[in-house]
Length: 266
Image 1 (cartoon, rainbow, N blue to C red):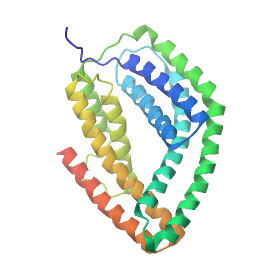
Image 2: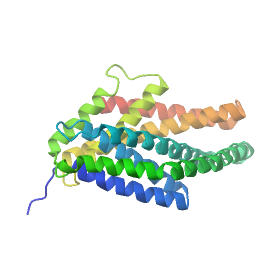
Image 3: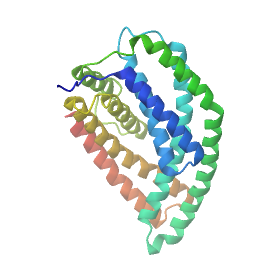
Image 4: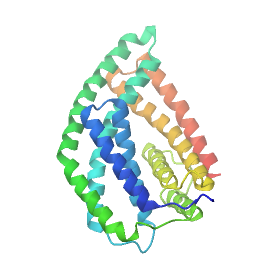
C-alpha cells in the first residue's frame, strides 16, 4: 500500500478550524503563554489555508464568508500577538538580567507584566465578543467549499505554489535595510511555511521547503524580538547598560537574519 503525498487543502482547512475552536476555548479558560501562543499560531494556519485556496482555480465562490472570517481572524491574531510579544520580552529580560542590571531589569519587566495584564483583558473581551460571529463565518465558508471538499493537490504543485507565493510577496532586489521590510519577509516566510505544511509528512519536497521557511522565520523572529525589546528599553531606561546589551544582541541577530535571507535566496 502506497502512501499518498497529495495535499487535501479543504480538509486541512476544516481540521485547522477545529483546532482554532479548541484554542479559543482553552484561552478563554486560562490565557497562559502556551494557550495564547497556540491561539495565535492557529489563526495564522487558518489564514494560510485561505491563502492557499485563493491560489487554486475553479473552487466554489466564497467571497462573503471568507472576507468576514479574515477580518475576525485578524482581530484575534493581533490581540494574541500583542500578548505573545510581551511574554517573549519578559523572558528575554530574565535571560539577560545580571547582578549589575537587576534593578533596571526588574523595572522593565514589571512594566511589561502590567501591560500583559491589560492585554489579557483585551484579548478575552475580543474572544467573547467575536467568537460566535467567527464560528458562523467559518461554518458558512466550509459550507460554500463543501462541493470541492475532496479536492487534492499534488505535492509538486503545492511546493511550486508555496515557493512562488513567497517570491511574489517579498522584495526581489538586494536585501532590504528597512526594518518593516525585513519584518515583512519574516511574516511571509511563516505563511509560506504553513502553506507548504499542508502536504502530508510523506511528501518530502514541500516538507523540506517548509523546514527552510521555518528556519528563515525563526531567525527573523529572533531579530525582531530583540529589536522591539531594545526600543522599549531605550524609551524606558535610556542609554543604560541593559539597553546597550539589548542593542548588541539585536545587532548580532540582524546580521544573522540578513545572512540567512541571502543564503535562502541563493
